Image (cartoon, rainbow, N blue to C red; front, side, top):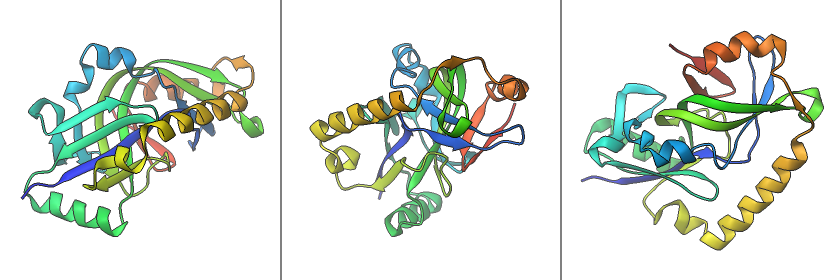
Length: 210
């Protein structure tokens, strides 16, 4: 018997600290970062998996078992899980609270850098070229991502009017965090050139693959 997973793998206007060997920076996703991608149907190649492992596949957009859409708080996901041991184990761990967050793998088209809090630069992702997967993970880089099973989904938990109010508050906080626009810090430039080919948001560290 199939079960339905609901999640928010991508959150808007919510800064998280990304730690790298070249230095740390804050990162946020702008609410419009995925508009062009979704407008051209670019999300249709995305899959849902565990820990960014395509061998641990749970659902995919192209088969109709995964739906992704842009909401006021982030990108929302709903998936019909297959009747497999992996899906059953995942659902059990979500219900127990062992798994409560999500992540995403992506390629970037555009971003803007700002002076950020505590002399740490802030990168605002403004345009995403490719969304490769959304993933149920043990250590999400963005702690406010969510995943649950059934129960009417995330929108049942967060009514639309409250979501809009929360979104407005998050935008105000985001604007308050940003200082003056700056160039990408020199110590991070080589990292960004590689990272933007494919970036996986997993834990506090970004794992880059080619």
